Image (cartoon, rainbow, N blue to C red; front, side):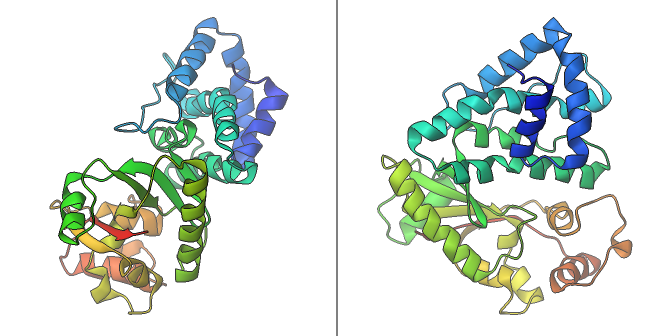
Length: 300
């Protein structure tokens, strides 16, 4: 159930929710406690979130909207679902022997999504609560600079892996790499450290899942970036780890704009060009080019 006001504030601190959002969330929670229907919704939504916790699902679970909620209450509602589900994911971490520090760092992504919502829309709320369902289901962990999601090899990536001669097929375990924001540069040293942590972590805490490859789907794997960035840039050196399996055919021009600049609402000619990656993204679009999501893999 939803923690009381004092405990909720502490829970939100544990989830790295920015301080400016905690007061409003706690205030809104008092309205929920007076609404039996809302409390029933939270209980059911939290139960659905952690159902089958620890299993690897086909896709992340949606967090249903709070019935009848509008404005700030609707935007913050997923926070209350996560707060109600928190004891369950902590119990799962304990059962798997996951260190508390790694559990805290993993679930701190809630606060990152709150910060992203304010950066994106200028208001409090939770951006991409569906994404966070992975964290509360024991499917994703923050290990150093990178996040690692327990997953499976897909058909296109599987074909590329087979061509390389590895004895793996679609459906075999694979670790999906994610690159979170607000964690500093993606240096080769930081990536090396994360990979070392991941090899040890999953071998110890999920020994029944032998992860031999890492996979990634991101605009960061668009090969065109190599033509726009210095050869020693962090992004190019990150790309060099991967064997590209395929590139999605449809352009995703908003992806690099959203991640590099934190908005897609500002006209491109008003965005800054202070860094090499800012200039690369904008110059390519100015010249009529498009950006694509690339998918690749490498052997762990």
